[in-house]
Image: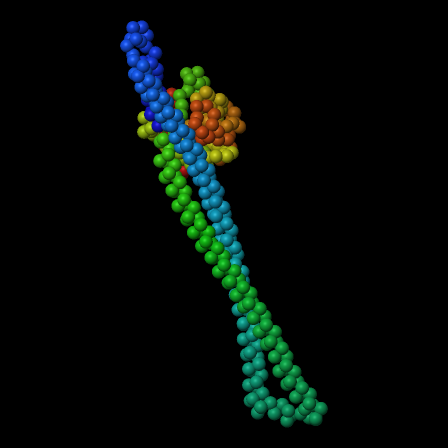
Length: 383
Ligand SMILES: [Zn+2]
């Protein structure tokens, strides 16, 4: 797209020359020829305007898509949080069910024991000839009545206890039923959320595909050449920082920012140049964090990189350098020790940058002018 516009501008310029020729040739140009040239010129200008409009539209489209992508990201985040909440509730429910089951078993055991007591009593009564012996042994009518009463009381008390125990058992079983219903609902909610998440991830994939198609049309070259003075300062500060960082050891890397990877590492077909880092795009206020423990080599404003931070890391005795460019602001200073995940600034559009994004570089070793140590960050960090 950019090349087309350049071509159109060149054609327009050459036409202007022929439109105002000098000297003798002027008389040789007929009015109709001038008119035809003028027409052509207008046409070229129209086409250039059309191309510019198309470009603006593409940029607008890209912005909208990125906004949608942001919405999808936060929806996925939301669904994930809700899912883990449901999962926690399910686990709680399972625990409660286990406790209720233990309670139920305890009630059942007591009921069974009571049953054994009653059975034994009945057997004793039957053995004694249907409780009559007990009664025949009565020494008086009063004694007999007392004995009949006693048997009756035994039976009544048994019945009350059994009734109470059965009530307890039923209560526990009802509670269990309630929780099982809730568990079912939770499982269904979880399934719905899983489906929602799947749909969102599909949408994300589709959007990313559309975005990467758009990318080549819209992207403009990001300038990442540092002035000689900047390079010298950087090399000097780097030495100091590496010494300071040698005592800070770090494990692995974390990603420098949330967002969409709009441009990968390596050769770029649209500008035929090598991209020594990756570009991460996200709208809104997006924190930039240090990818590992380290020491800030330099934090300053560069005309090409904008607000930029260089950090040296000691990863298991090995030097790595990370670069964060085009930030809105930076909140660390040269020589400062930073830890993995610590906020160092906010994503921005400063320096030679087109649209808010983070240009991130990772160097396996020290930073050098040729950027010969630059590696694909995707090899070390999951984007
Ligand atoms: Zn970049």
